[in-house]
Length: 145
Image 1 (tube, rainbow, N blue to C red):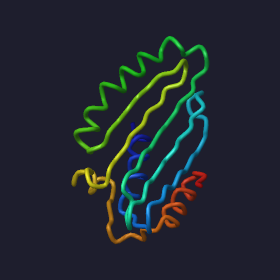
Image 2: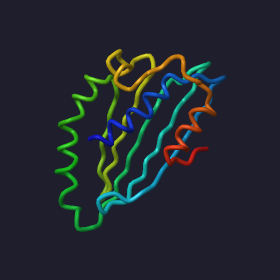
Image 3: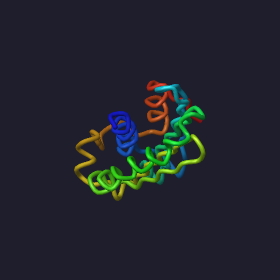
């Protein structure tokens, strides 16, 4: 769950960013974790002069021997998500396809609660350009387009 909070921190921090016009920044990172292939994707939509929505998606592809455990893993995550939705003001979705589990978390700047803004270091004074957001994500290991 620490990595989920880290991902939340990265994308919630982006909510303080501003930009010009309506644009989308998409960043991805792939790695191996605990024997699974992991793909992370972050999509930031800028509307007017600020980041409007942020969606973070993590897909974990496990070896075939894990197929019997996927529903149990999904059920475990499903039990925790209402707390994230209530506590942090985000929307979540968890899906399983074979040996791949996908976890998505979406936040809308207008709906992000004050507790989340404090927790994730929301800073309305930060450099808010799309370019600054891209630089931050690339420094964290993401590839952006």
